[in-house]
View 1: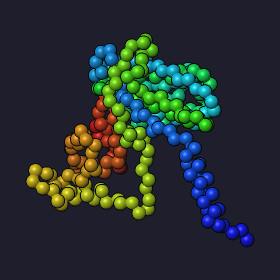
View 2: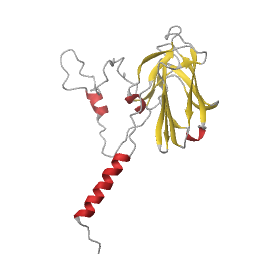
View 3: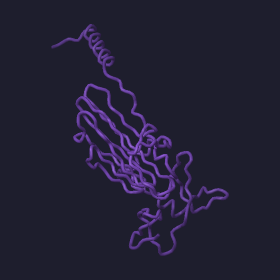
Length: 244
């Protein structure tokens, strides 16, 4: 039977400390900025093409591209190969592009088409490499249009933005009484508050929610909501029919 002595534990501890010291420590990836062309009004339905090159050397373990747009659609390609398409009001997208990267210079191209509203796009590309620091490419003020024009940085993208396309985990023990709260109203409603208003989750700073209307008699339960190309809300009823 092998016996462990105090000396053995001391050596083991030294090995663990050594491994911790020699392990590479990489900085947190930067957050992308919302960007748009600096030419003209953002509120106009105008298009723009953005390009950026990234040089890759060494073995790539994984490359992940994230893209999102606000009041705009976009098409992203790498070295001429289409990667993804987002229509206006689509949720953010995330794809793996490891096999599409080549050694040396790679060109990322984004064709964006704005709609009426404050158009902006944001992208991030993270390239994890074996035994080397990762490469991060994010949209910021250093980007240019394909015509060489400067872009405007419109602020950082909140990290929670990337979670919008992920469905929540639901367990058999999840709370399903929200519809009852909406039906029965808020019993703690105070002065100036409609007892029929349901409790809402806390909102990020600067955001507000305004109730447009309540469901009317004969309108059934509302089960889904979408936004059409003109920015109008379309609600699907549980049994049959749409509300616009």
